[in-house]
Length: 125
Image (tube, rainbow, N blue to C red; front, side):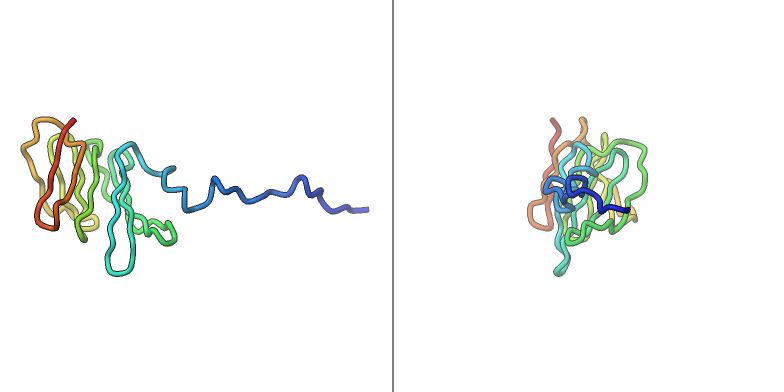
């Protein structure tokens, strides 16, 4: 005499935990950055001492940046370049390859804002 499970025990889909809203679960305190390459949208998020790049359409991990010696305080995308603000440096990345470092901040930069594709504004505070 096997009986079907009660409809009260059936798991319902939750609007709160849909994949579209799951990005907040994997990002740290710095705001994420969005980039569009061709017709594909990407989101770059900071996870402590490394960064991750997600394909926005399916929220799949595109790649993971290297583990750094310092906590990432801000991220920003300009075309195919990802910029990460560390304690005293701003590091430019092409995927996981370091392109260069900008030095000169007396305090850790917490805001990165591109102005077109040629200038970057950074601020601490």
